[in-house]
Image 1: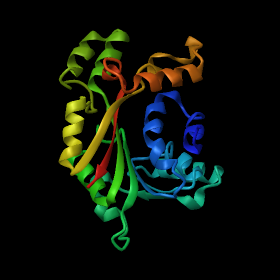
Image 2: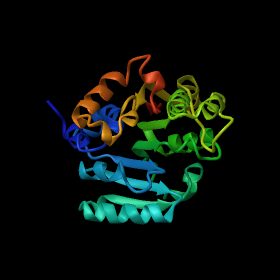
Image 3: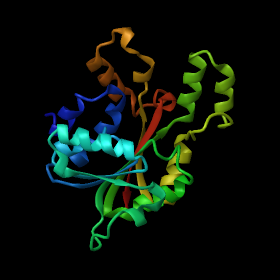
Length: 240
């Protein structure tokens, strides 16, 4: 039987289907959670989570993104459950108020590690904000997916450069590197999955049925070789 979380996720872009599916057992259990969304910007995840009854704190360096978050949360009727704080992920200890030793139940770190100064520091800061047993959802850009996307769009030189990240201003990760990073932050990673295996390859002009794309995403997200060339990588990890 679909949970409220999975039902809500059906209304969101198919490219994030694998992430929502991984989060579903955590956010759909019926218990309100304290959620930290690092780099959550305008609330793509924060607002739907608040609509499910969770209290969400978004930390983001962009004042404009946080203003959009406030408007979006207000329009959705969940303004009282969403709080925006301006700050950087690698300085969470300076941004988050002390809470008597109570950490967050769930943290989100989605497509943030590519742009921070030090991904290891940011993940350690996030791990430190969790309660014991709390979990963090980490999504990053996948190097193999970026290489394939550049090649298919007719840019073989850029594709070659991305093989070792010589080009561009964003990091890309491979599964082994991501898992090593997560473990280095003192977190226990679960299985990794692909994010947007096919959704980013199918534009609106393709006429593909969104529900069929979502179903295909979920079917391929945990299976190699398909997940290996997805746009992104995702892992759900727990603090000891």
